[in-house]
Length: 96
Image 1 (tube, rainbow, N blue to C red):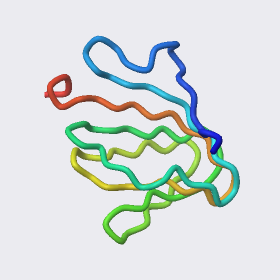
Image 2 (image 1 turned 90 degrees about the vertical axis):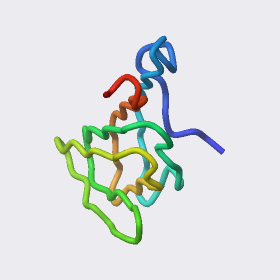
Image 3 (image 1 turned 90 degrees about the horizontal axis):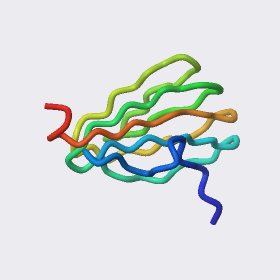
Image 4 (image 1 turned 60 degrees about the vertical axis):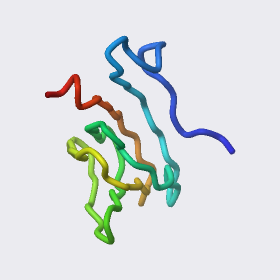
């Protein structure tokens, strides 16, 4: 399976554990359900439309929106149209 993401910084992780990446999804493609574990996550939408799915709810995502996902949250991102976004994952020991 083709992974729809790539690392922007050339390193998947900083020494403190912060991760940054770029995701580009085709229409109706999704990243798959996963958990933030002990991290906070920001999603910054660059282009397109989609939704964040979590706990049976759907949050619309559109260009120029920033979405915050708290620690220990199962979630998935699905594209409605093509969807491009940057994610930033921050371990709680860095964020607090």
